Image (cartoon, rainbow, N blue to C red; front, top):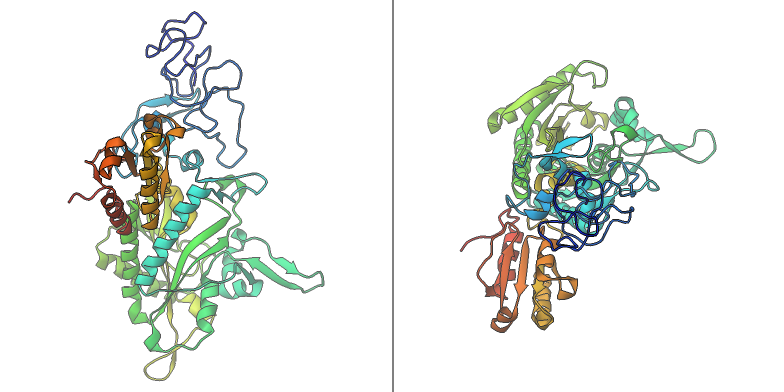
Length: 532
């Protein structure tokens, strides 16, 4: 980062601009700025290693750290359109300002030459934060809209998926796996081909001869689950039959709308379908809304609004007025009974039925749909789904579509922005970092890490070889728990815990601290500490 060219601070004998915090001949961090402005128009030194290699413009920490010089030549050719290095002063100097995340009301304008924004908006863009924190990235060789997950991001994703699977098991769902490909006839039968083909990838022909079989990357999991239900006979005693899958699907998005994790071409969808009688629909839809509420509470997500999505004008919807009337009445009743405020919006329904959409908003106020509950009379009819009723006759089930977090990609993107990278402790890539003050405390620190790992915690050791204690604490500023082990703690068999929100706890026994952290993690709590 460079000092502004108009800075009035005294020049050193070397011609650079000297910080009032540092000695003559160098800034506090031993580097000098000779020209230019920093990226944010500020006039302050920036902590971090390394100098800019882009000529003579002072220290730059943007290649892997918190900021970058505006003259840095490195550019990333990806859908984010930005070089990493957007974590700004708010994120560095005040981690955990409002636990469990880092978001707070900071609106001091920052200047980037021709672009003005707020610090909060800049720090909450998941495309920048995700790369800065080593969660995900993209590469032109793989393709736009096809992000790959780095180890920390994969940890967040896996933990989120396991939370959802566990919540579904507890709610009586049975999990299945289905292929990401299907014959074109499958989607013609479901109605996707006639109503949704513009968003699907073109068919792949299996063979060169005319009339060869065509397969398609699936745009939805619904047809596969309908076929799985149809593959066995069912009695009314089995209903509701709740079928869930975290599976891949694909959308042929135009390159202009792709961005980060929110709009991608390869999607991992948290999807479920409930096959039930007409009398069971309302209770199943209400139960799905309750699952969504509990998940949002554990994830620290606040919905922006609930939307009843209805059909609009045009031919993209199934032409069955009576079906639409019945399904709309069912969802309206569910919303009214739940007491949730909602608004009805035309033109947002699925092609086969209305839906309840749970909307979330990013830092700029842009809304997106994260969770959904839908009632579908169309696909059970298309696939001729049946169950044997108490009268011995064959009856048609109703299909309730339900997604707690929607696509995993969009959910993680929202979590990154919602928490500024400071995830709830149970979701954090690293939950505890152990900080021995010197080499002498390494053995008890290593024993503490092993104890935490045995308890299922994600714990790491940050030894003195990684810098001073202060530098290691700053490096681990997003980790929920920092365990400092000094000579006194090592002798007493204790550990001094520092919480991400700035609190420092009294030293605890080395066995008690991991156990209490583990209890909070197992409860999926958003609180960092439970006072006893």
